Amino acid sequence: MKGLRISLAAGAALAAMGGITPVLAGVGLHWYQGQLPTVTRSESTVTASGEVGGAGQYITAVLKVYYSYPVSCYNPGSDSGPVPGQSQNGSASTTQQVQANHGNASFSLQETVAIPAPPASACPNPAWHATAGPLTITSADVTVTSDNGGYPTYTKTAPHVEIPEQALPHALPS
Image (cartoon, rainbow, N blue to C red; front, side, top):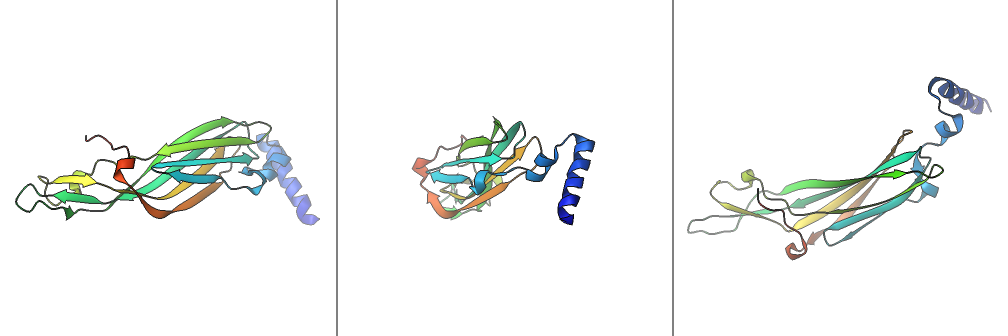
């Protein structure tokens, strides 16, 4: 019982200092009913959805998708290649802000990943032509923050499955 009194006293002190009610200070942002978000992949699109409780007035949900891809180098001379280049990796993300309803908020995010243009440094000679792909999505992170604090995070590691190049939207060369 002594621990309970200390918690209530700490909550009352927080309420006095910052206007936070002891009930909200003790609950905090969490996955609603303990259900982790759903993260799925179809071709080059990753989708995440879920629900949180203990939100303030709004939440901000972020889906960040991590990927890797090889770069092949083609020599314009007599040995046309391809010569293996450097493996590259990157990430793409999307954000959604959602109004909470009685402290609960649902989110649904979608991110489509395109193979980026290979960097100039990917091949040993700047005169060589570089091509990127196929793309491999390696994992996705879902992070939710609230205006009242807290940030539950969920990471889904994808099986290392290559996505065929014809299924991917390609970035235009810069």
